[in-house]
Structures are given as C-alpha cells and as structure tokens.
Amino acid sequence: MGEEPLLQKLRIQEDIESAKHKLVNDDVDDGDGPVTFILLFTTFTALCGTFSYGTAAGFTSPAQSGMMAGLNLSLAEFSFFGSILTIGGLVGAAMSGKLADLLGRRGALWVSNSFCMTGWLMIAYSQAAWSLDIGRLFLGVAAGLSCYVVPVYIVEISPKQIRGAFTAVNALVMSSSVSITFLVGSATSWKTLALISTVPCVLEFVGLFFIPESPRWLSRNGRVKESVAALQRLRGNNTNITKEAAEIKIYMENLQEEFKEDCFFELFKPRYSRVISVGIGLLVLQQVGGLSGYTFYMSSIFHKSGFPNNIGVSITSAVQLVTSILGLIIVDKYGRRSLLTVATVMMCMGSLITGLSFLFQSYALLNNYTPISALIGVLVFFVSITVGIGGIPWVMVSEMTPINVKGSAGTLCNLTSWSCNWFVSYTFNFLFQWSTSGVFFIYSLISGLGILFVLKMVPETRGRSLEEIQADITR
Image 1 (spheres, rainbow, N blue to C red):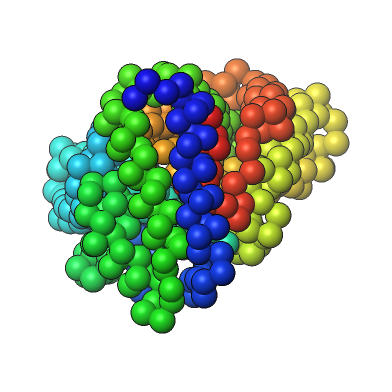
Image 2: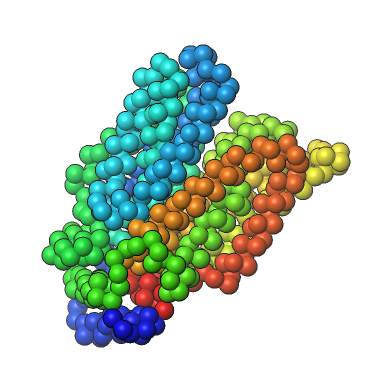
C-alpha cells in the first residue's frame, strides 16, 4: 500500500506480461476469439438501446405538425416537449456510472429499457401536454443511461482486434435510427410512430433475458467463476480463453489490492489526469464543435441557404449511412487516433465551408453557389461525425478508464456531454440570428483547436487489451 503509483502500475503491467509469457507456448487465443452468435446477439441487444435513443432524437421533426394540431399545442408547449429530452438525459447521465457499477452493465440496460418503454407508451396514448412531457422525460433518462452503458458494455465483451468495429456500430445505429424515424414519421401519424418506436424496446427486453453480464464487471465484483463462464459463452465453447481470463483476473486482483473502491474524488488524483482530460476533451470537442446545432437545426440551415430541405435531409442521411459503414471497416485498420485526427480536420473544414457560404450570401456574392456549398459543408461535417467524432470518443472513454473508477468517470463524462449538448442546442438559434456565418466560424475555430488536442493528448488503443491500455495510461 506504500508503493508509489508509478511502481504500482509497473507491477500490474509486469504481472500481465508475466501471465502472457507463461502462456505464450500454449494453444491459446490472444484475446481474439471468433465472432460467435452469442457475441453478435449480445451486441445487437445492447444496440437496441442506442436505436431507441436515435428514434427519440428524430421523433420531434416529423411529429411536430401532427402533434400541435391533434392536441392543440402551442409552439411554446411543443418546444418544451422537445427540449425536455435533454433534461432527462442529464438525469440519466448523473446516475449512469454508479448504476452500471451497482447493477452491472446488463442491469443498467434493464433500467434504461424500462424508462424507454414507459416513455413511448405514455407519448403514444397521451391526451394532454403533461403526459407527453413526462414520457419525453423518461426517454431522456433512458438515453442518458444507454449512451454510456452501451459502449462500455460492448467494449468489455468484444475481442480486442475487432473491438473498434463492434463499438463503431453504435454510431452507425445512432445515425441510421434518426434517418429511419424521419422517413417513417413522414408517412405515418405521430401516434403510430410512437408505437412503432417501442419495437426496439421490445426486442431489447426479450434479448436481456439471454445475454451474459460483462466478464470484467463480474471479475471486479469477485465473481470469478461467473466471469470465466460469461467469457467462454462470448468466445465460444471451442475457444481457449485461458490467456484472456488470466489477464482480466490478474488486473482485477491488483486493482483490489492497491486501490480504493470507486470514489468521485479519486478521479482528481494525478494517475487519472490523462484519462479524464482525454475523455472530457473529446466529448466537449464532439458537442461544442457543433454536433447538436447541425443535428437539431439542419432544416433551418438548408432553408436559410436556399437548398430544398427534404432533399438536403435525404442526401445527408444517405451519406451518413454509407460513411458509417466505411468507419466500421477502417476503425480497427487505421486506429482511433488516426481517424480522430482526420475526422477533426474534416469537422473544421465542414464548418468553415458552411460559414463561408453564408458569409458570401450576406454580401450577395456567389448567390447561385450558396445552396450547394452549404450542402457540401454540412455533408463534410456529418462525414466527420460518422467516421470518427460521433462514436470514437465514447469508445476511448470506455477503453481507457480503469474499472475501479469507471462508474465515477463515466458519470462525469456523460454529464459533461449532455451539458454541452444542451448548451449548443440552446444557443444555436441565438447565434444563427446574430450571424448566419459567425456561428459556423466559431464551430470551425473550436474544431481547429481540437486538432491540436488530438495530436497532443490522445493515445492509440487499437489492438491492445483493455488491461494493457489502462495500466499504461494511468502510469
């Protein structure tokens, strides 16, 4: 207990390396078991929570006219209905880390699923504004929980060589669910859309009965036999998991021996400074770089530029789908840091192009080119989101954070993300009215600073076990 933190970390790494050397001549998979049915099914079940979040985010756009007319809602009442999702998200974010530590990743998904199912049913059968608002609040709580728990769970169950691809699916599901909701909502009533939105909740509810708990969470809580059994299920009965199980066991034993239980104030110790700085920095960059502004007010951007709104949204949705699949393919080939660097440059360029489009428009220059250049700027921005900025920050938070402080760190990062989400979505209209070009130049400047942050601070985690990453980054 009297050792310096650096020596403690070195000893953990030495124990892990020692376990590797002992098993190097055995017929043991290097933490890279096959992609089994149960691994795919478990990932699918978890991603149903992300899909539900996307449907909640995309619900208000196609439902607005029908809800306002059908329930005689004022613009103020509907605006409150839309914005209360963020308030619920903050509530869910505040309890996400601790809930995932107390109940397990699977247990936290149960809680999220319950809030989500209740929220959609309340909206679908609402006859008054108050029940709509409570239902939307519940959806926000579910979203605040799932946007932390889902990537953490997927990271902890995935083999290291395909971990990036599996977690990148989270961003693909998020973007596609928003697009699907917009398309379905354009062809159905808002009540029908709300009922259809319960489908992923039902699929997740059924799946949760059959999926295993995270082996790392089980090991952290002293349930070693259950941890090994869960890992064996995920990797397949014919896979030798000795090496991966040994790494997890040794790492958890050292954590329990050397470090205190998860405590919020532990995060402010020097050994965790880089973990917290990188995690919060990436999530602030993701949100304050303009993500919520572009996502929530895309129609306003296209309308102001003169580009047809429906066509712009459809093109953007199609490009997001294609580039999300591309990101899924390349994330484990080129690495997190490389993709983040490229994506942040594109994020900066996208906002710069959009800002210049509106600047020229304000001086009546190149008016014929403003709609198409604004579309190009929006597309470049969203490609940066789907290729890297949208999903990789949460992947890296999940990979870098030691499990003994993962609950507190997750809560802090999640609260930061949702707070920045609210700030950007709240301020966008004011800034857009102040200067149609200026708001995008601000986003471009923030993204430019983000490039320097990524190059200076962000480590590469591709192809390394979680135990290796965490022992190294907390030296």
